[in-house]
Length: 401
Image (tube, rainbow, N blue to C red; front, side, top):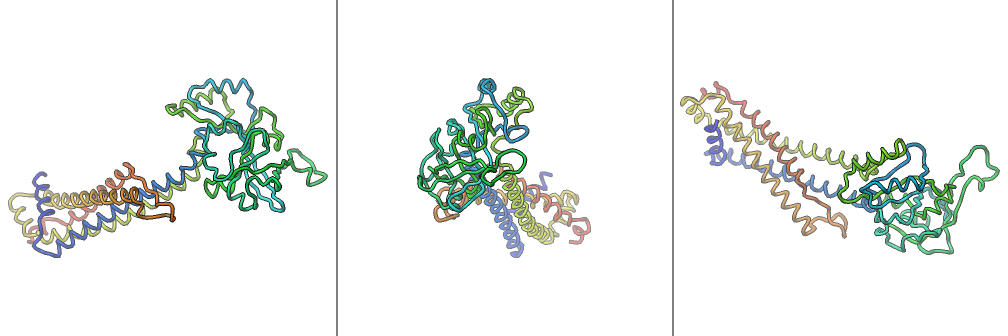
């Protein structure tokens, strides 16, 4: 086996007397280099895009969110609050009242989600850092902070006190209403800030003080839609989840940041998998050149193989020569390709070579797992291709030389 490996390295790194075979070997190796570099670059781009897409969730979503197990709201007393605060690992908590509402501005109406938050909300999230105009709401006032999309659709701005907004929500109950006005609870609010997160959230959310949301929904002082938690840095999330569940059995559905953005995570992971499979197909096509180069090398070395066979080397060992040759070629080419891709990604990170918009460079991220994936893919497919090519050798071929 060591002898076969030695001969394989000699065949790979020495020039053939047939110049066409040398060119074909270079083309095969170059194809694998380009394919592996492309796969690494694309995986790095998707890693960067994933981070870019999810970076805003760390500003607006809590570490954990406690939602009612059934219904839209739950009651949480002072005794419950004191018990929750005794759990080690919770850095801060905030109560939220959330509901779909109708926003009216002059003659325009829009359906959005009102999120009433208490004074601790900014200890749990950093949503105020995304306000691009105006300021955050002041507790005890009928103030709101809206997304830019809602502002554009309803044509209102900031501190426009002569043009207040009206929030409407259907009244709970059964039976018929005597008038359309009697079917809704309403409250007038003033917009004091605009946030810019992403297109979806900009068109969806409007924040208010929790007292305003309670008034609109007829909630009492201990009734909430959710509790949002910020955890300490070194806390065990699973252990904390179990502790909350044991303290409040069958009360809360607990979701972390990933579960709150489950659809986005699934979409990004699906796209990443699809791109990986497409570029793996490109690598497979490139490996056909490797198979062709090895077969051409076998035909070129028929006389040498006959000499090795007559010296006592069996057919299996001769097959191993070209199996090792193909495996070494693809592995080295793959590693060179990953190195080339690494340099290109590093240059993009350092010098912003490709721009997504005039002000935003294409996001990329170097991850060790992507290096492992590319090398493992090249290694597995290269071994398979080398195995196919080496099966061309048999006793009849060797003796025919």
